[in-house]
View 1 (cartoon, rainbow, N blue to C red):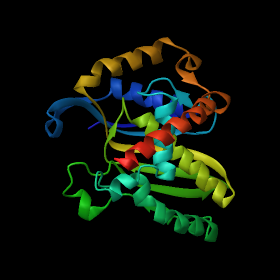
View 2 (cartoon, one colour):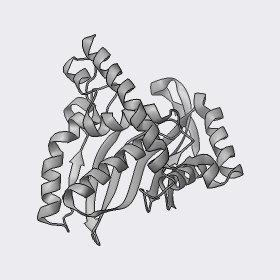
View 3 (cartoon, helix red, strand yellow):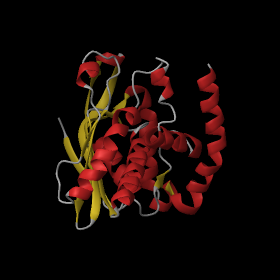
View 4 (tube, rainbow, N blue to C red):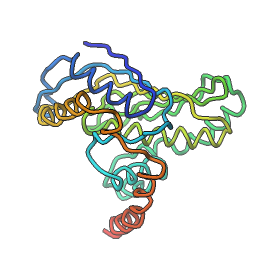
Length: 248
């Protein structure tokens, strides 16, 4: 199995480098759980300055509304009620929210700690579930007065999920850094199975073509002053959708 490591200054640069590395170094094999095939490798990518612009990649499925909704799901738990209603088994927010106060206290207690870990995997549920959590854990470390985040995923859809996952995790990293009064450090994204499914091969190839034939500014947007404003504009529509789902 290919073991890949790539880096980039910004999140889009690191993400795009990860896509190219997967495209050039992968095994193609059957994926019986979903009756398809996949291109797969183990991937670690590092964004050295995750809040540096440009922060937004054009190479993901969705737009400002979808990204804002996912950010709210991860950080604010806007769809946690689906668990309470029995429609969903879990959300990432629901699994980690009760751990965050302890984590912030631990980072304040000992800035050198190696114990500040948010556990997402629910062993009793996930071993029997048809949809166990992909995200397994997040570790936060303060070094040189910067908060570094390391995340581990058992499985990650490179073409459709990775960018939105990473953006939301970095927003969580930023929130925790502010809570402990340090700046944001590196973001490290580890996926044991970084893959693209067969029905997304053409999409994946189109991403690679754009990355290789374009300058970085042609495949990215700024977040501050550009996408943050569009994401803000999407909030009323998202709130309306949430209220409609609650009434069902």
